[in-house]
Image (cartoon, chains in turn red, blue):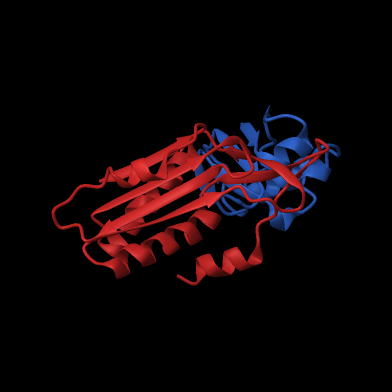
Length: 145
Length: 83
């Protein structure tokens, strides 16, 4: 099972986890990324590419499924304006044993940070905004796989 | 050729796309950036950090030395920051 979604609306992580079904399934690992309070920000604005973002998410799902022999994988990424505490991204991986599922979600998040066309902008209380720069540590983590 | 801009590059450009017919001696993405930067604002400002620009040709990521021959759309954007 592959579930890939690029959407403006919020998602329910619990509901997404209940969608996994397989008799061989022994482990599900998941990660949710949220908008956190930092530098007085009030919201995040997330921009995507109309074609490339979806394609990149699909490719990442395929590569991760093959690499970790997954029985199921989910990636949901939101775009638009998200307030503090709101979910941004959800990844989940299902496998026979825990090691593959747990490594798969770390791999997916590391690669997502550098391989998927998405851009974040911080929106501050006074209405000003600032595009977030790509972190060198994210580039290093992604290229270490 | 259609040129599309995203995120910070789009904001610096002040628009999300251009349609430009390039001279015959413009062969690569590097040539495009050089040619447009020489035209002045807003290109010179938007393309100032050359090493921080990323590109896609017809929706496929491309290196700066890639040929634009037979390409209908070039996308220009900063390094990605999703997740």
